[in-house]
Length: 387
Image (cartoon, rainbow, N blue to C red; front, top):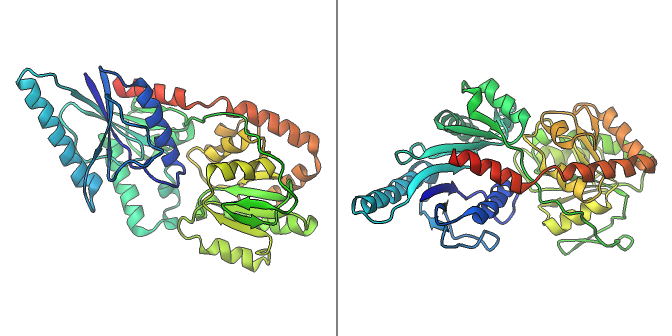
């Protein structure tokens, strides 16, 4: 009987973005593969929330107490304790479980593992190496040191895009055969939402003065590398030409976000820019479905799940041509240089006036979204774990 151990904390949060979405979906898929001979143990800091997969005989949770240093101290101690119990059972000729692999879905991994238990770590992006000044010092230290330690200790490394794989090979001295591209998944279903009454757009119980096709949408965390300032400058020019247009920015505050709010104020467009904070999946789909277009102006992305969300909601997409975004978006978006306000403005003008173009963008987006699957992502990940 083999046991796969997993750090499931990224999934055990109420507001899921990025790595949380990744971990959450893989846990649900892994549970489908659990059996008497293949068991999963998910280690958590706190009680699993309602959206987590329900426990079964072969898919279990273990709550490990620890105030600080959970990943560095308390988790490895608990792993060794659980391993020792299984060793004792084996010595007593009782049924026992073999600790086969530990899966770290988010860069970080325990500094030591039970004997014979291999480490597989997923790397989503290396933004902290490209934009170190955009991270708090304590976060930068953890990302730099802990990621490096995890990568060098891992038997296998998962990169969520080929772009991320090349970044890993460029910045870490690891065998190229140990770094595997396993694309993020997406649970595709064509999203349709009812028409929105004029100027009566309800999001999280709050009314917004929005009209179908009269707002530009951004979805993502508010932080410098998301390049929201370029979007604000382009939109300010676009709004002068199309004064009915609004800009919706949906996403939780990350770090160093204050300048984004200051820029909207400086450009005197704060009356038509709506900062909504974190938005639920249902409300996100509503926003995608009725937007003029979705804009992802990022300077760097390890993958870019919002592209697929927009595609599934039949929303035309404008994307920067940086990092992994062309890899994920394919031929569906209109691309622009992330440092070019003029290019983005030109693309906004195109989608506003050319209905034939936007229709073809929507069709290409729907086809592109269907190329990604959490089932495939989980199966490829599990194959690597069991190798």
